[in-house]
Image 1 (cartoon, rainbow over the protein chains, first blue to last red):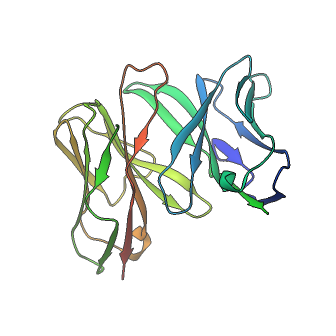
Image 2: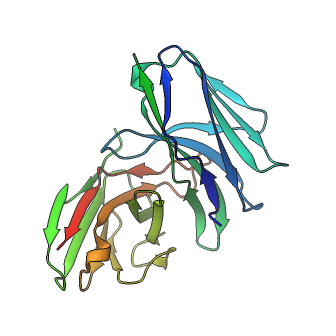
Image 3: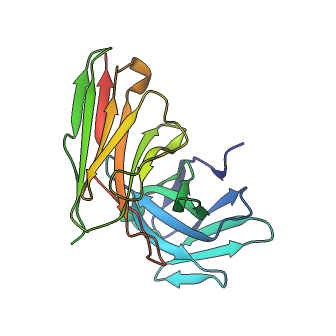
Length: 112
Length: 114
């Protein structure tokens, strides 16, 4: 079983739609959570952190449910430029320090 | 601006060749990482380093080794390349003590072993 699981998609949505992705993690010692975005043939980049109380950044809302061990990302009013792969990322602490575990990513395609 | 560079964007090597992938960061980060990314498998950690001359195995170290002689440079070595090492290789760095702990990635090296 993968430590961080995501639906690979693709999610095909029209412009202006609202779309949500979920991610589940298995390591209960996970400390922090993030969403990274990866454009086609590019490197991953941090999109936003996920706080326990939930947080919003413009059209993006991230939520964390520790009891059920899942994280979500909601995108409102989708734009063509939102087309990308969204990686769910979990931080935990190893002997050597902070470590990140990446999910396989969910691919989003926003159509005109 | 944060910068992680990798020596090659595309590389084609033959089975059995020794391959060096170089990564350089200019942010004075203590931590550096090598991942490979394959369709359906996501990013998998090969090796990481939390200081000069220090290295730790990640989840899939077999067939790879690393070198960190200077803080800014982290090299991945394939001693004898095999076709199952055809992949996208991503280097990343991070500031160890940062509370956000963002990892910054290089542009990637797409390695093909024939």
